[in-house]
Image 1: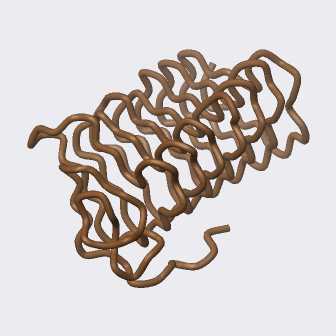
Image 2: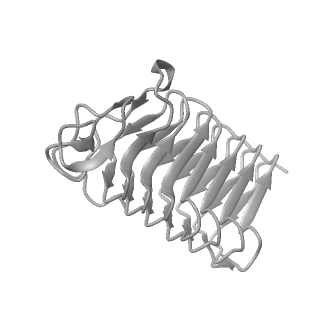
Length: 209
């Protein structure tokens, strides 16, 4: 089914997935809270052009938001945190956006983009992962105007070191005015090769939400 709206649901919990979209398009899920579900908080599978607006996803048993084989979806103004055995947001698809959201304290990665192309992350707070803030093996990823700091391994990790897979991560705050560490010159969160980190922000962009 398509063109549905799910709004103002408190709380969606103790299910397998909090909600699953399967071959379901042009839906809006807004102002809802998903927590303590047995698998993922929100599971989007082969579903395009959906919007997650101002939802909170936390403490689910696996991942927070899973977007698989899906394109043109938007995560906007959301909070995704405290997934002890999983990843905050997973994307396998193209032209998806994560905007003005706070993704933090997820154990394995805050955001992982496995495949696809031309995904965008903008205006987000991404911090406190034990592993990586953002890990990608996709083409054409753009990351801008984010606060990326306090992640255990890398702020941004590029898994594929060929020219086609360069990540443009300019204009971000890396937790230090001297920029990112790793291949970068500073003491902020580390970046790998094949990540464009210049220019960077000299101070935090402030509170996202």
